[in-house]
Length: 269
Image 1 (cartoon, rainbow, N blue to C red):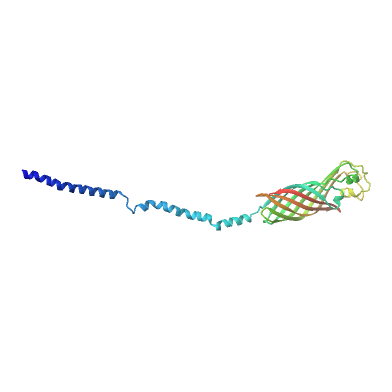
Image 2: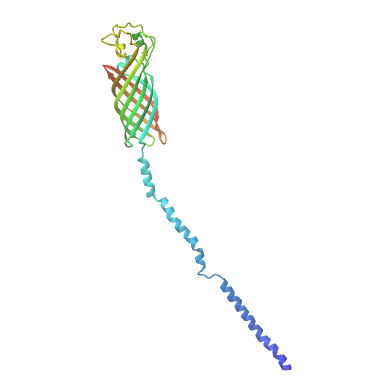
């Protein structure tokens, strides 16, 4: 009985270390299985490294000069198919008109142009010119006062000359139609009397004498002629120019002429 009791402690001394070693190995193996393997770590980081590669082609396409160059060329060649202009100013007289009309009469003008290209177009203008009579003309008409004006319809090919980004010019010339009219406030001239040079220009002289019916206070006559001139433009807005224009107007009917040199300041867009 004494020998068996002594054998039990020897058995525990061998068994306990073995159990401890088995438990330690099991814990180490379990810890290795729960940690991520090296092959799995790059897969979780792949989306982050691939995002810059997808965005690089888009940034390169926006920075390429080949795509921005055609846009500049198209803007440089653009032009408005239709342009409009309005302006005002004063007229200088010329020819026989200067004998009866003072210079400095006011004018008002408006026009529209159809452009076939950046340089060529066709422009139609309507213009009103005031023709204030001189004191010598009123004395010849034996009138105390009067009003006179001319309506002009001008059709001109126009040549645009762009000098720089902000400055330009143009030339125009073509046929014209004029309607000149006026009214004397009163006149002491005797009907049937001989016409002087004023009534010849006024347009109411028949066979060298004033109408017997006394209908010479009103004047109304149509004349065909021509006009030519040019202007200088200065850009004040992306689609608007300030212009200064000078023209020569000439109309004639039955050896009666109307000659003006209007100076107009206005805008076109």
